[in-house]
Every structure is written in structure tokens, then in C-alpha cells.
Image (tube, rainbow, N blue to C red; front, side, top):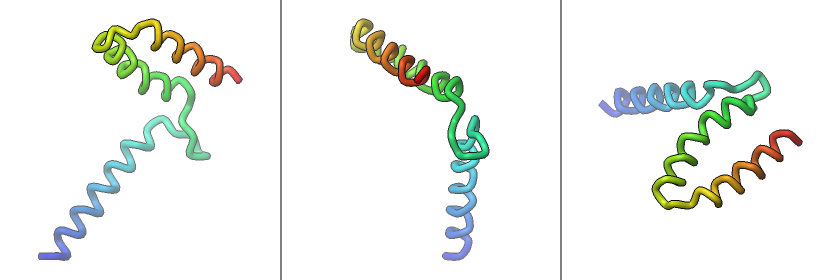
Length: 69
């Protein structure tokens, strides 16, 4: 029984790792557009939830500056 649970846990970790690898390059780094696509929905939700549109815009512009660097 313990072996079955261990196998299932290992398989689940493998699936999560495969999902986390979406958009990664061979070197293990994500493409900047994939990273932005992952972050932008959360940034929009936080801006609406907390009314901090100006802070999110400032942060987004600094991140955009770093991506362009």
C-alpha cells in the first residue's frame, strides 16, 4: 500500500513539473512573453481588487524596462 501511495505522489510531481515547464527554453528559462502572459492576469485582478492601478502601472513599467534590458 505504501508503494502505491509513493508511486502516485511521484507521478503527481511529474505532472506538476511538466505543467511548470510550459513555455521554457532548452536552458530552462521562460520566454519573456510567456512570463508576461502568466503575470498580467494576476496584476489586473490585484489592481481591480485593491484599486491600486497607479502602483500596478508603475510596477509593470519597471518590469517592462527590465525585460528590455
